[in-house]
Length: 322
Image 1 (cartoon, rainbow, N blue to C red):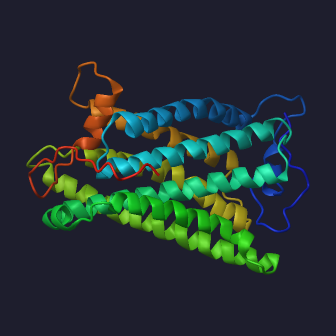
Image 2: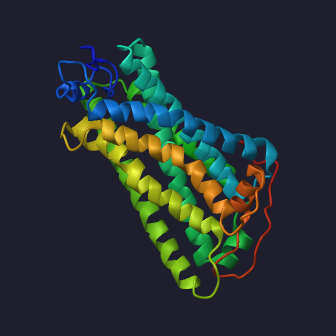
């Protein structure tokens, strides 16, 4: 199974991993002449096996939140995050299929799929940063949060993050400058954005964790905060390496880790989130229940750590699915 890339470059756009990039050709060096599968091959096959299950899980979350459950402020974020994870898995799955079958896609399809995966990865990171920041504010300033939070802020933030990510990844196509200058501008914007979002998500999650730890002595922490902390932890362990590879290995040309391992972790990150939602929803309840009720319990427990009141799931029907 040959994974060498064609010797082509995209002159008007930045190079993409797996197409027209010299980085991806190095991963076939250790492949034996007998055609036996090495560790990278097994990781790629395992990633392709994980992707369908991740798509089914995120599809179930999209169906339940889109048509079966009344949405609250927090579930708007989860709905968009499930959509970003599903699109990321879809784009990455098609890219892996294209590599296995000797690059069956033409140049335009490769560019579209690459932009789709990068854009949805950025959206997922942005949504997690927004989720952790908003929950941190609600834990630190519960009265202000309940009284002064704008009604449609969740939908507005999600729409803004999707639009910003789209503009960000279309920027290299619109800048009419030399290729080297365009690549430099793209690299600077990418690095600054990923670093900023990771720092915001890390600081707000750490603050939320400390708040939960202090409050757990008096009462059991809400499921919502446990869900956020688990989701952020999985992203830091499995999602950040893929973005780190794009930033360091691909743009700086510094080899730090094989692409296949980072790609496998990114599949795990986008596939495990639905399992976290249903796991948190079933905590402390051994009865067999429909997935709708389990997911609603996980996303509807909005007891504030500082307030001591529990809000029932409220929804604004005008907050659209983005």
